[in-house]
Length: 601
Image (tube, rainbow, N blue to C red; front, side, top):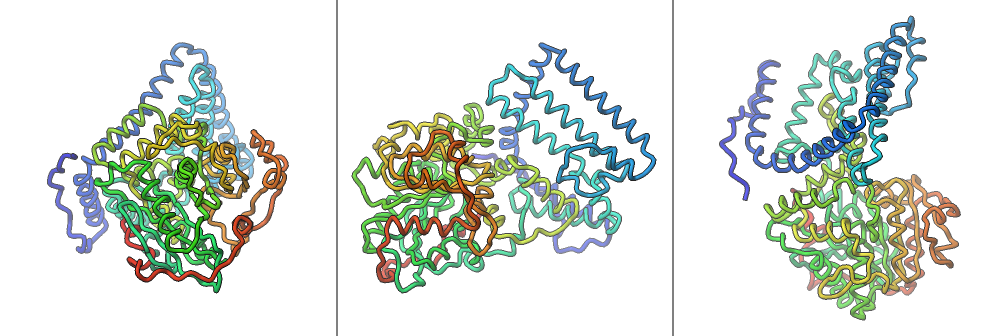
């Protein structure tokens, strides 16, 4: 149990209007101290978990270079030559035109403002930062004796430090912020300080920067509003059945197994972005698992519990109430990993109720987990296990922070500048609201998942893992399967997704969408935005080649959403139609979206 916090420093009355700027600053600092005094005992273990590992890596690098100082001396000499060249270059500039021409650096979206080129001060800061970054990366490339994992982690920590040091991240070295200070007499910084405090309060003392206006959306009002009812619930999930909108529906219903790292409504966002609503309009009966947001009492729930109380229980309910003997199953991310294990479990137990299986951005082969691999080694997982053991679950906000650090120049610093330095309000965006609506992860389930999937990669091995006393063998699965991945997905690399589809022994269809982990999936036909690639040669006839490059070389690009292509695939698996299904009145627990999804961290 955590130690109780000392009495916090008294806060000023938040309703009391400050009389002048200095009083307002004092008021805000008082609030800041009060927030930290309440939560410091929660912050220390989590911060140490992240930073001690980076410190160990940098220590290793230091000793690496002390053994051969010639490497670092050569690079330092090159650095100082480039630095002196910048000083000489700027000293010789006689006009704005000369200054602009003297700025020979690669384009960087962080330095769009023309003053980074035309102003002597900002030009110098940008170019100095560029050569420091270049020097540091050259330094990393000289480390031949480090193993791949250590190099990957070192690059991650170093890049985050370099991104932290970028001059655009500070008020005194960002031309947009300096202009805002002059135009508003510094009120932008006061507004930014208020935004910072609001984020700390919202996240219980942890800094997790808002990316969207959290007040603009309400689940059940303008998100997750496709009509439906909760018809079943247990300790881990609620099962939603959506109301039909067509006279007839496909005989085989669809069951979604969403990730439980986030809430299910990524698949039912605003009506114009809702995959669920669109599928219902195409004549499908759609069911959705809505996972509970775990509390300490769920700490002993295991991966097998998620299988038995999740998709297996849902399939039982659906086939008993929908007058059908099979279901089209869909898994997203970790939900797809669970679905693959579920298919193998069903196959082993002669359960033939899976008509088809669709996998959105799902890893089955974890040999290359991509950038997430920086967090996945024995020392870090051991430390995480001790932390989770203490609370019974992993706080979902910590996972948010970890994911954001993989893309800091997209998911951290632009919002830091916008919210805190420019003092602007966040804009409404449904995907980012969903992204901020985190879920906790039960202790036993998550440790099993990290050790057996990511660390040991046992799911791909026949009998490598055992769930509910059943050895799991993906090679025994013959269910027709559809795999979706996306080109720029940094959470589940598309080549890693591709390597997993070859573990099955049934007919396979593979689609590579444009965009990333979320927008590659949420791509409604009305957007006319992202296209997709398919390779008819392998989808319809030949076995998939071992190398993803061989698949890509002969794949063809198609404009528009992949959704219609997928629906045609589903219909080809089961074309029969029946009268639209009514939701069983005697099973209704509450209206969709249900109560499980409403609990926020």
